[in-house]
Amino acid sequence: MITCAKCQLQYKTVKIGTALEVMTTDNQPYQLFAGDRMECPGCGHVIVRTGTAPIAAAHEARYPAFVKPYAKRDMLDRAWTTAKEKEKAGGWR
Ligand SMILES: [Zn+2]
Image (tube, rainbow, N blue to C red):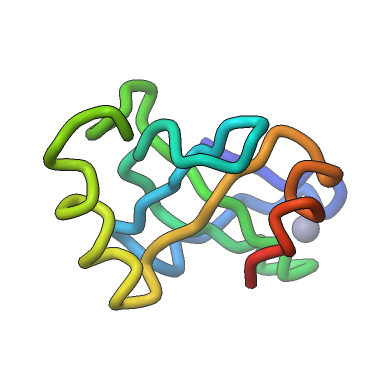
């Protein structure tokens, strides 16, 4: 269960079957995880919940083919380590 600590309400799944692309510190794709977007019904905070193992790694030849369908359908989120790294990448969304 995933709960919003501020609102003390359980997050609701709002989009199933998304993907999360984890970025390296030099703004390159690293790994892709399958996930779901979830939203707190109280404050509207949105999170991405993923599995523990990646479904693809950027060094694999199949990687671009894995990512493309998610990006096309607005089902792709990205994760930088720090806000500074994200800012350096020009933000995204
Ligand atoms: Zn909340």
